Picture 1 (tube, rainbow, N blue to C red):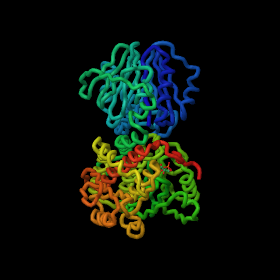
Picture 2 (spheres, rainbow, N blue to C red; picture 1 turned 120 degrees about the horizontal axis):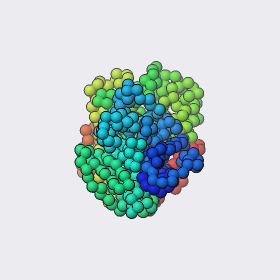
Picture 3 (tube, helix red, strand yellow; picture 1 turned 45 degrees about the horizontal axis):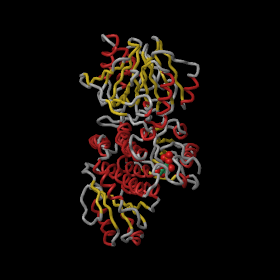
Length: 604
Ligand code: F6R
């Protein structure tokens, strides 16, 4: 996701900003920029693509003395990755960089346009700088105008702003997106959206809390809380190890990404939910005109997300839905009819098999949609329409947060289509939207849950195989649980529909066969329970994941009581991810780089 840096001091500001941005490269980005205010004048540079492009553009630019500088790497959410959409964004005499999403930007923008403001970009961010300059006209100080602006923003943000009206100051605000400030003996001030750019420059840093805003000058760090009350900075020692700083103290990126799911799902939902409908600004409603079938096509984990979606589309949107494994679809002379919306799902947007099926669908004249995590990827460029999942860069080879955001998008999309087709009544759509808002809470990893799974994992390091079983959407989750486990532990695991076990695989049941049973309270509980009992009677070792205690299990992981099966889905997703992680760590494997696997499979 996006990265922010800021610097106020007398050293080489350009270099400090560019070096800082380099430290944030691992988060993923598609454009970058800097703005520096020195001797009352701004210099700014932006470039699409990698940082070398920005370095190239700034090669003849030098900073010499005291300056206030801000920089940004952008991961596109509102608007394409173009130079105009890259940060910093300019007003008349101020620049801003921003991480997060301003939910009420459309209303603010409408009012500003009515006031005569011209917008250069398609971003939500640009409203911040114009709103600030509007407030500057009626406020006594730039700080007052900044505080007023922040109080007018809804959504999540980490913001840095520099303005000619107070040229020796950087203004900051944080709500929902991370940001810290550090200082040193020379009195320099460094900002960043995560630790690494500050390593080597500062020993002690202050992590801002939600609601904090204020300013820094050469002599001061002034922090105010939500209510405008001044507070002291709380400094803590900064770890000086860059790799561990990138992992934020987690042992593996995969672990970090499991923990990030609550935040990234909030990003996925942001700006897309109103009380009674789903908003996908990126979709033209005519995309669904004349459509009688949805065909979902993907590979691996993305295929499992698609399979979950196939249940939701038929249940909620009442539209015929079919599912395809991309590597199979491409070579089986499929029949493609024009009343089908062809939907590809891909974290990377580059998977060769999936990309090829998209090309086939386009060639056959079908309307196409991609659900993707990487803007400007090949699939995003090719499809007629795109919904970005906003999971941020995923470094662990075993996908976790990308899957979570894909399922979140699909749940939203099934309600969006339900509204278009009138297949769910308004109250039910409103109820489901309130459930969607609950997902981030349900995927928060608690210490208690993680500890429980860590302890449990030592009993599952051997055996002749695992069966993950579930019904309905819990079947694709079972497939995903099994895929996670085999990818990183190298143990054999299969996902199976619970009701299908008796048609063959139950022959394998013995104490060395581990069954991981997904038993949701709110979907076919009794039926799934009987299937587990059948396995228990044949002495399989059983670990049940459920909100309801189950006495026939050898092990039991209790999820919290949920209002709906989809929330149980997300709770169980966390359990199967953590279980795979902990088993694999105990086996001594490199969880982030499992043998034989690549993050993006761009060959057949
Ligand atoms: C598993 C995993 C893979 C990918 C698959 C498709 O953890 O990550 O199964 O899901 O290779 O990749 P994308 O989603 O990039 O098309």
